[in-house]
Image 1 (spheres, helix red, strand yellow):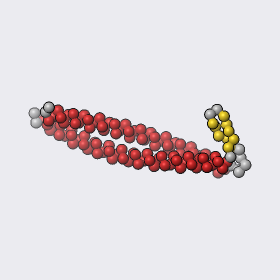
Image 2 (cartoon, rainbow, N blue to C red; image 1 turned 60 degrees about the vertical axis):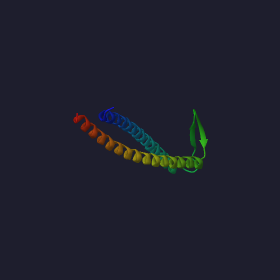
Image 3 (cartoon, rainbow, N blue to C red; image 1 turned 30 degrees about the vertical axis):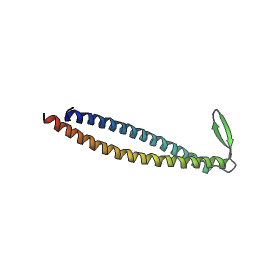
Image 4 (cartoon, helix red, strand yellow; image 1 turned 90 degrees about the vertical axis):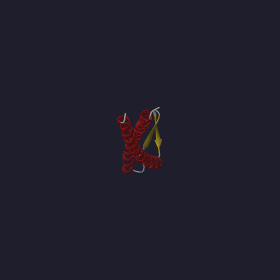
Length: 124
């Protein structure tokens, strides 16, 4: 196998790895957007709870049934959900940062391999 063929195979492998990283990044961005949406919805619910009187009736949808729930329990559940979503957002943010670094590193490797491949092909 010639040096050019070896470089071509290396370039193809690096290109495939780059595309995989890009797909993972896109999935993480979608996940981040979904979490943002959930966080906003729960914050709106939290604000609505703050406006309710202590004796207000709160119902939770469980399957097709509305079940009465104590206000304190509902508030606690929403607060916990917000904390959980925020923790997930932090995790996804870290993942996004890591994937950005991997993308940049792989892009540099691709450019270097492509340059070497062009030089090898040009020498023939």
